[in-house]
Picture 1 (cartoon, rainbow, N blue to C red):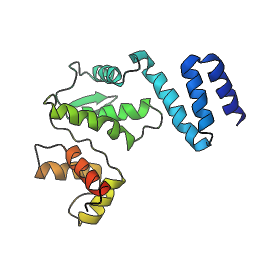
Picture 2: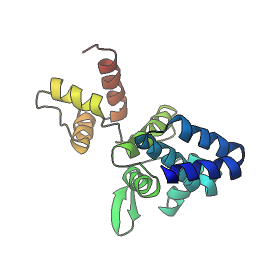
Picture 3: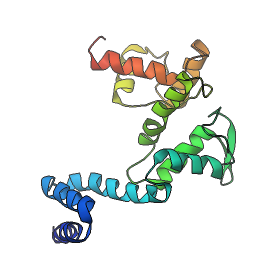
Picture 4: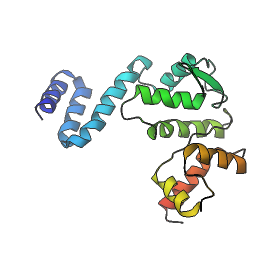
Amino acid sequence: MICCDYLTDVLGALGGNIGQSLAEAFVAFPWLKRHKFIRALLENSSKLRPYGYSFRNWLISECGNLGIYVFPPSNFRQVVLLGDRELPLERALRARLQQTFYLVGPTMAPYILCDWQLWLWNEGRTCLFESFKLDAFHQQFVARYGKGVIPPDEDGFAKWWHAHCPDIPPRLANECIWLAVEHKLV
C-alpha cells in the first residue's frame, strides 16, 4: 500500500489536472485488484501518446508497419508478414494489440478490433472479416444450442458461419447471439 500511497501523492502533486484525477481514482478504488485497471489506463495511454492519444492513429501506423498503406484497409483478410509469419491482417493487428497494450490478451484483442471492422464493413469501406467476440455469451449459446454442429472455437465458428452466410461477417451473428442471451430470448 505504501507504493500506492506514494503514487497517489506524486500524481496529485505533479500530474496536473489529469494526475489529480488519477490520484482520486486510486483513492476511490482502493482495492488492489482494481489497480490493474488504473495501471492499464495509464500504461495504455502512454503507449498512445506518440499517436496523439488516438487509437485510430496507432492502427494507421501498425497497418503501415505491416505494409498496408491505404487506411482503412479494404480487406482485413489479406496476408501480411508479421516477423517471420504470414497472417491475415486482422490476426496480425490482434497480435500487435496483445504485444503493445497492457491487459489486452487473446480475448480482448478481437473485442477492440471487431466493432470497428463491423462499422467499416457496414459503411462499405472494407470486405468481410473474421474477428468476433468469443465471450461467455457466445460460448453459452453455442454450448446450449449448437448441438455439436456449431464449432465452439473461434476459427471453427468463423468458417462454419462463412459456409452458411458467406456475405455476412461472423461479428454480426455474434452480436445477435449476445443480444439474445442478454435479453433472455433464448
